[in-house]
Amino acid sequence: MEKTKTLALMTALVLIFMWVGNLFAGSTGMTVAFYAALATNFISYFFSDKMVLAHYNAIEVDAKTSPLLYDIVSRLAHRAGLPMPRVYIIPEQVPNAFATGRNPSHAAVAATQGLVDLMTPQEIEGVLAHEMSHVRHYDILISTIAAVFAGAIVMIGNIARSSLAGRNGNGRAKGLGVLIATVLMPVAATIIRMSISRSREFRADEGAAHLTEHPEWLMSALAKLDDYANGNRIANATSQTAHMFIMNPLTATEGMSRLFSTHPSTAQRLARLENIRLGRPAEE
Image (cartoon, rainbow, N blue to C red; front, side, top):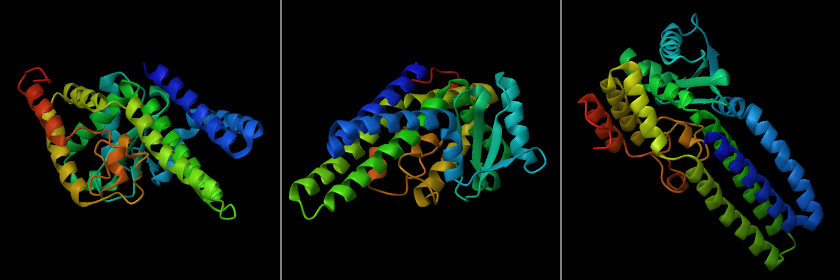
């Protein structure tokens, strides 16, 4: 299923690039845009994880530089039967975390410094178990590529608006630029929503509960994460990458971030985890 979604995203990006290229320069522009889209697809598939990690200034750590974090990830990977992912710390005091990579053999788990500083070891394990569940379910490829694609689409919209709006006061060109920008932003949001189901967060929460055998660890962590997210925003957080985090890093802001929201409410997540803790079906 995730491979099918990834192929659909790549196809959608090619079509959008070609549409905009045709608007700019007819068939020639469409041809150039086609090859540009192919290049973007290639880069996204093989390097999107590195791009996202670089965007958040993530620093790779090991057993010596961050023994607690590394030990927890190592233990969870062994328990889940997964290869050991690369481990990163994001120099940010708001607690949060995400996983990225194109498959479990090329995965990375990133946690903010705030998560390490403000959470108990059990809460950290609950959060990282959630991220390892994303790795196990192959959520990381579609999640990371969707982030890069949405960013590319928004960039195209901004370029189109700026370029066409500056054409000697041509009212039609200005209108076309605004149209492209206003259409492409919702398209980017729709692509993320179609490819990133909210159910994946429930599934990762459930996976974390079973992986740690202590759903209350993740419950406690989610309550803290929600509290911090409502009053603070991660410095480099964008609407295009917000879906990757365990907790929406844009909760404290209004506007376009809601359009891209792919997270269920914390109350819903806690209720499901409570059912698991009590041995009841999660959906009750």
